[in-house]
Image (tube, rainbow, N blue to C red; front, side, top):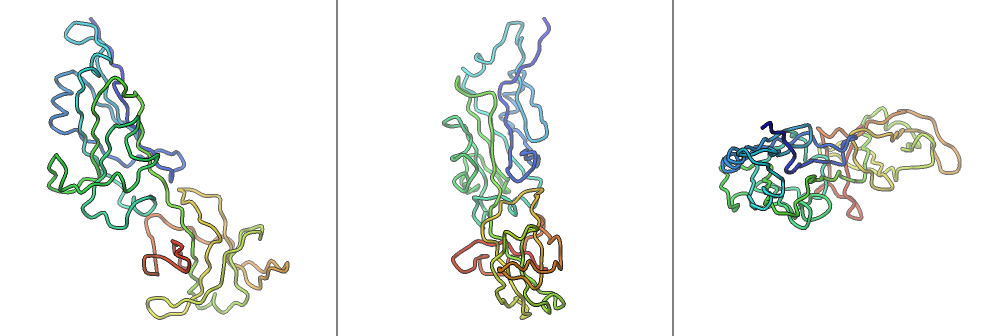
Length: 272
């Protein structure tokens, strides 16, 4: 009898930062115990960009096989997760600053794999206290206990940061201009400032802070401009820099303690 393979369950990794919504930087490795289950049940693991799946044969031991048959055995699957993007923390929200001994633990409960709608610090545990010993800290661990209610499609969703942007103007030739401002192209959004600041090396600079938080995105249509001779009475000023640089998720700068400013706004610094 010929056997085809059907999905037992699929795990999708998602991240709001990316245009596609797909988080393609997770490497999944089954534990030795899970590899034994896969062999014993003639299962197949398939990896795709941003997801992986376990498939079962429609014929097993010369008899018809079904998904409900396997789910009813209430098997436990364990997978080690590694993140291949060293900049992950730079664009991901709802996480503490220090995760030195922390790893993510994702396990199926209440129809989802993490505590809230998006992954948060509530899904972090001390890897040294986990039931399965790890000699070095993994990015995370995924535990799937099969039952009759387990959906085929399952999701792990990360959220992108939303921070106030603070442009730091430090170049001497730019500081010589008067009436500096940062606005959008239509001049209907203006950053707060300028505020005088002193950089850690003692150099003077001017800062401009966005009026609202700005979601971080892999690609964005936002365009901010540095202008001179600007005022709110109708003079839109003269453009000096038509497209100010956006934050690079691979290089993040914070000049303040715990990257806070007045009012406890969490800010992302872009130094010009």
